[in-house]
Amino acid sequence: MKEASRWKHIDASGRQSEVTGVPEVFAQGQGGLLDVALSPDFATDRTVFLSYSQGSAEGAGTSLFRAKLTGAYEGGFALEDGETIFSGNNKAYGGRHFGSRLVFAPDGTLFMTVGERGDGERAQDTSDHAGSVLRLTRDGQPAPGNPFVGQEATSRKSGPMVIAIRSRLRSILKPAFCGLLNTGHVAATKSIFPKPERTTAGR
Image (tube, rainbow, N blue to C red; front, side, top):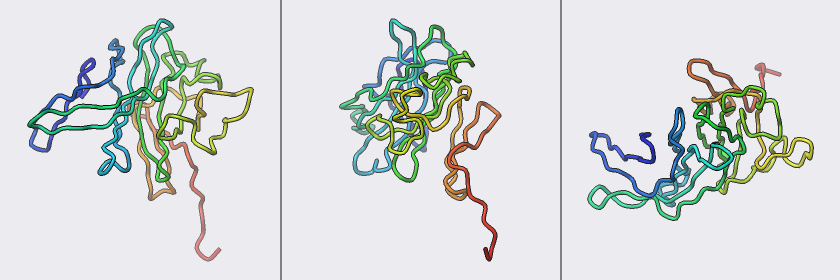
C-alpha cells in the first residue's frame, strides 16, 4: 500500500500492520513507494525489494531498496538492514512517470522498469536510465549478459535490456511462453525479453 513513506502488511483476513523502516520517498504526483518484490528465497532469507521515487538536489528519480522483513503482528513488522542498492539517473523535477515494476526471472536476476519522467526524448538516450527495463543482480548491479554493458558509447550505471519505452506500470513473466517478460503502460502491453522461438513439430 502506497501512502507517502508508509507501508502496510495486510493478511488474508484484512488485518493491517504498519511496517517500519521504509525509505524516505519523494511523495509528489506519481511518486512514492512504487512496487515490492519478495526474494526468490524469501522463506529463508526474508529479503524484500522496494522500488521508490527518491529525491535529490538534482531532482527525483527511481531507486531500488533492499531489506529484511522481520517481526509479526503482535510486535509489529520492520524492515532491517535496509539500503538503497540502485539509484536511477532518470532524475527530473516534478512528479511524473517514475515507473516502476519489479519481476524476478527464473535465473534469480531482477527486472526493473524505470519511467521516462514525462520526457520521451530521454528514453532514446542510452546513457540515461529513463524509459528502460533494467536487469539487475540482487545487489543492484548490471546482470551478466546485458546487451549494453561494456559499450563505452552506451554505458549506463546499470545495463538495460530494453530502451525507448514509456513508464511501464505492469510487468509479468510468462514461463509458459519461453520466459517472456510482458510489460504495459496502463492498458497497453508490450512483450520484450526474450523473444520466444517458434518451432514446428517434426523439424
